[in-house]
Image (cartoon, one colour):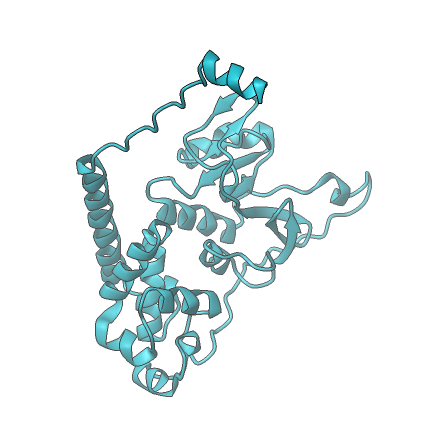
Amino acid sequence: MKNPDTLAWVEELLTPGYRRKPMFGGFTYSYDDVMVMALFESEGSRSHRGQTYPYELWFGCMFPVEREKQDEARAQFPFLVQHPVLGKWLYLPSETEDFESNAEAVLREIRRRNPLLGTIPNSKRPKKGRAVKEDAGTYSRTPMMFREELPAEKLKKAKRLSDLLGLGPVMEKRMIQAGIRSVEHFVKMGWQEAAKRLVDLHPRHLNAIYAYVLIGALGNVGFNEISEAEKKEAVALMAQWRQEMKAAKKKAPPKKKAAPRKAPSKTKISRAKKR
């Protein structure tokens, strides 16, 4: 995988200037020599050393924190857990309730350069007596492309869904799979119907960030720059759909277990041997 897929929006929360590097099937993110985050999107692993966990071990956000600072970090971010395999990392599984708002909270502190978050790999640590270069400045976000265009002008010019702000080729492909065929079609149905179609396509889209992206695309603004009212509406809608899905699962009849295969009788075994 060359780029993040489902969690690509998390990368957008970082300020420009980071360095992304592949690691163990995921990606790490660093500013200068300080590693601040890793993203993983691998499904199918919930067990480690005989213990099973209620979440995917390699699908979510990881934040490196020195062990002596982890108690303080977890007090500030109680939704983070120590990763079962990589003990130096605090983990936010994608299945966590309020995953999107929790991820935003941690990334906000990374942008503020919270000293609890981030570590310097041993290979990058300065040798004794070597001066460490410091930068007292703060990260700043550069203007996005086409930001100066009005939403109506941008929508009129867009020929493909991926031409809209925040919608890349991966998102365009998913929207087409969900039956959202064109920009005009998207505009007519609105972000609510588009979000519902994406959720019906795959439960992983049951995340307010996807709604933020759709709202931003229609308004020609970044997903993290939509109004608070729009964010609240998206969060409420996702919570409603989440409850509806839980209720539907409870009503669904339990799956029938396949009957165990009967062992062949001694008569059949003896006949087979004679043949």
